[in-house]
Image (cartoon, rainbow, N blue to C red):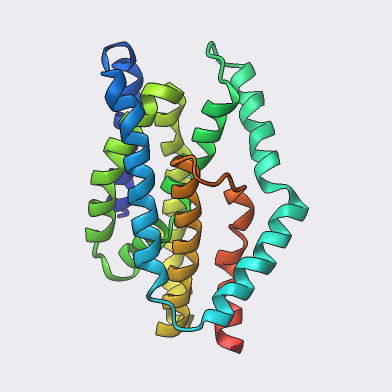
Amino acid sequence: MPQGVIINCIVVFLGGILGAFLKNHFPQKLAEALPNIFGLSAITMGIYLIIRLESLTAVVLAVIIGSVIGELLSLEDRLLTGLRRLEARLPVQLNEDQLDVLISLIILFCFSGTGIFGAMNSGMTGDHSILYAKSVMDFFTAMIFGTTAGYLVGFIAVPQLMIGTLLFYGASFILPLVTDIMLANFKACGGIITLAVGLKISNIKKTRVLNILPALVLVFPFSLLL
């Protein structure tokens, strides 16, 4: 039973809905200041994961080639197109900044190294502690960004549940093939993506973060070869 994944998704949904509901009652000072704090938190998480890498060459190569593939496939542009189509069917209108926030949060909630590894670890060992810890931060993050990007933040929990459940049940097939070095490099690769998300949320550097995601797949064979 993927209870860690389910709880994580529930708190994201509740946080996003609560933030949107309290939008007009939320202090403007906090709405402006806290996104930067969460961006810095994501940067810190990214650095923490990056310093655990075992093969710098494998991770850098995975990020570069993965980014090339992501750019050629226009992953982020395709997601933007999908979000705009979804927006057209909803009684809310999103500006470019709000769409940018949604993309960053989809990466942070669904594709962070901690989230992916947490789901895989839960499926393999039954230990949900990683996802429980992630849920605490995700709740407040979803609530804060719900005040700016609206109710759609809460519904990020839907793809998050799908991805987390798939990883949970697929973990028994994946983890036996993964060495400690491959896992460390995988975390480091996720850390780079999380760092890029933090820079984006903090308005320090805009990066098409979604286009880096193929690196999470490539880092396994590159770690094995190098």
